[in-house]
Each structure stands twice: as structure tokens, then as C-alpha cells.
Image: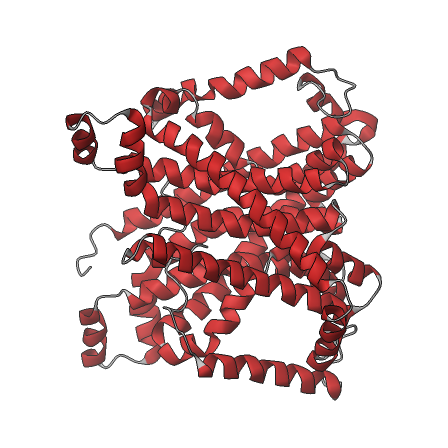
Amino acid sequence: MEPAEGLNSVALSRRQISNPLGVLVLVALAAIWEVLVRFSIADVQFLPAPTEIAKAAQAEIFGGELTGRLIHTVGVTALGWVSASVIGVALGLLLGMSQTVYRYSMTSFEVTRAIPPITFAPAALLIFGFSLKMELVLVIYGGIWPALINTIGGVRAIAPELRDVGTMLRLSPVDTVRKIVFPAALPAILIGLRLGLSLCLVLAVVAEMVGNPAGLGNGLIRARQALQPALMFVYVIAAGLLGVALNAGLRLAARTLVPGNSLTELSAS
Amino acid sequence: MKRIRLDSLPGLLPLLLLLSLWELTGDPESPFFPAPSSWSQALFTRGQGDKIVPAVIDTVRTFAFGLLGATILGVVLGLSVGVSRTFGRAFGPTFEFARALPPAAIVPVATLLLGFDETMKVVVVVLAALWPILLNTSSGVQELNPILLDTVRSLRLSRTRTLLGVLLPSVMPAIVLGVRVATPIALVITLLVEYLTAVNGVGALVGEAQRTFQPARVYALIVITGLLSLVVNAGVRHLENAVQRRRVGDAWM
């Protein structure tokens, strides 16, 4: 059994509420970029200056399509992630708790998991066409794996003594899951869900770029095709900020759910 | 090792059942689910067979250069973050943002600035696969035994010797772990870039098969990417084991 991915990497910055130096560096980088482009020191074709990007962002936010596209991507990512998490955790509990099910199915999951979810995008496109369905299917499919693998790992790592307590108390199977297995595996599950969330966002953007004509991914492709680099950067930055926001939201949720558990501070790759 | 493999065989049952069911009910001409037996044939129809091997080589090359670049950059940045708190704080938000950026979103920017070529592919792979290596290296440095660092100080080793002789070897397991986590990412992103830009490789072939409505070929190529990923991951696990075995006997940890 593989160790759950992400268990071993630690958060980049340990909860720094205010980091003036870091912000300063960001501003400085933007300033250098501005100067380089303004005075054509770095003559890269199509590279817009940060001020141009800001202007494009302003236009796109007020009276443009950014808000609508953002809502679409957030909605699909959230919906897909929740569905994927429910399926992945349920299946993971089953595989983690039943040795028989594990024995007669785990290898199938391992083999299927080896196939990068991205390569299913073309198949999903052929089956579902350029549609929302295609995007959702791809997002859910990809999001299931981290939830599944981490749940299995978390459940199988539970100390046998803890399971014995459940047997001794004659808990019903439902109560065993609810009171013992799920809480004990929760830290591992949360890491899986967090990995899944970033994967869902990536797959949503990919699906929007190649398939479903909506959302941030599509905005990005449109701006690229229309040769509007400033607008394209607006969408790139929006996608990045969305990633940061989703990560931060989940970290907050994890800390509320499992207070004081160091595992929730661990960051995913 | 052999016993473990035999043990895992029953686990293949559901997959085999699914594929058999698919074979029995599937129609080779189906636009959605062509029977598995028609897949391998679809790889070689209309003289497209000779494209497969060069495509696999292209994909592996981009993957290898991307992972190598990610490892070098990740280790250098990771050591810097680990050694200097200030460096970590200064670039924390920048890294946080770059890490949260969906790799697919980088692709249009990379093609615009770098064009449709091999360099662009490698750059995107490096930018996506770098993070686990960076994070593992920096936390590896931060978790080093303080006595080790005190020893270095009292021996008055030069900076270069500290770095190459002490720091790098002792965080090696953390680096290798980061590389292992980065490996599947690098492969996925290689395929993604190829699919999105149609610049060489297996990913480009899958995209082409999809655009020309050849579902059997798409499924066949999906199987190839699965095999590729199994081989690549097994290779990295070997590497990790080799590094860990070498470390047995290091007394001061």
C-alpha cells in the first residue's frame, strides 16, 4: 500500500496572517516586470505590462464576463468535488474496512488510477460532446481518486485496539463507522479531500479549455485566440487566485473540523 | 516480492469483468464504447502505427527533462527556503500563488511567450512539478537535527562544504520523496501540454484521435498512457528504495 500522497510535505508558510515582506516582494516583482516591458528591456512579444493587465481586469470585472465565468468554474468545481468526495470516501470506507472487498478489487483500482485522468478528457469529449456534462464527469472522475486512496490508507492505518473497542462495545456497523472508523481516519481523509479539490479545479479548467465552452478556462482560450494577452493574463491570475482561495478555505475548514491536529496543517503537493 | 504480486492478482477481477462485459456488449463501430478487441487494431490502421513509438519517445523525453528541471529548481529553492527564514517569508506568497495556479492555465501563456516547441513543454512541466520537491526539501532542512548544524558550525566548514557535504546528503531522502510525488504530476502535465498544444507526444496523438472521431484509438492510447505511468512510477520507486538502502548505516541520524 502506498502512503497517502501529501502526508509528508509540510505547508510552505506556517500560517502567516500578515507577511509584509512577502507582499513587498510580490509588488517589487510586478514593478520590475512593468519597467522591463515599459522600457522594452526585455522585448518579449505579446508580454503585457502589469498596468495593462490591471486595466484589462478592471474592464473585465465591470461589464465583462469575468464574474459569470468565475461563478461557473467555482460552481462546477464545488459540485464536482462534493460528489467526488462522497463517492470516494464511501468507497474508501468499504475497501478499507472489508478485507474481502480490498482483496478482490484493490488491484483494479491501482491499475485504473495509473491512467492520468487528463487522458480521459478526449474520451469524455467523444461521449458527452462539448457540454457541461462532460466537464462534470471529468471533474468528478478525477476528484474521486485522492479521496478514495487517502480514505483507504486512513482506515487501514487505524490501530487494531481501536477496532477492538468497537467490537467490545458491540457497536452496530453504522455506529462503528460513525463513532470509530470515520473520526480516526478523518485527518487522512481531509488530506485526500484537499488534494482532490485542487485536482477538481485543474480538471474543470482543462475541460473548459477543450470542451465545455464556459468558465475561466474558456475565457483564457478565447483571449488567447483573440490575441488579447492582457485579458489572457487576467484569466490566468483569476484562476490562480481561485486556487489560493480554495486552498485557504479548505485549510480553515480542516482546522475547525479537527482542531489541534497537526495533520491538518500538512499541505498537499 | 513475487508473493506480493500473486496476492494482488485476485484484485484484478472487477477490471477484467468490466472489460469482458464491455467486449460482449460493445460494438466495434460504436462511436462511444467500441469493444476492447478493436482497440489495438485501431492503433495501426491507415499507417498510423509508425507514429506510436516516436510519440512515446517524445513524451518520455519531455517528462524526463521536465522532472530533471523541476528537481534542480525545487532543490535549490527548497534549500534556500529551508536555510533562510527571510527568503521563505519573502517568496512565500509568490510561491503560494504560483503553486495554486492550475497548470492548464499556464499553457496558453507559455505558448504565447515561448511558442509551440519542446522548450515550452518542458517549462510548463517544470513549473507544475516543482512544488512537491521544493516543499519536501525545505521541510527536510527545517527538520534536521540541530546538533548536526551545531557540529557544522563548530567545525567551521565553508558554506560550499556545508551545503554539499552535510546539508544535501542529509535531506536526500526528503528530496527523493518529493521527486516521487512529483513524478506522476510531471507525466500528467506532459500529456496535458501535448494534448492542449498538439506539439508531439502521446498526448497530441490522443487529441488527434479525438478530433478525427476514432474512439477505439482514443481508448488504445489511454491504455498506453496507463502503462507508461505504471512503468515510470515503478522506476521512481526503485530509485527511492535504492537511496533509502544506501542510507542504512548512517549513524548520526
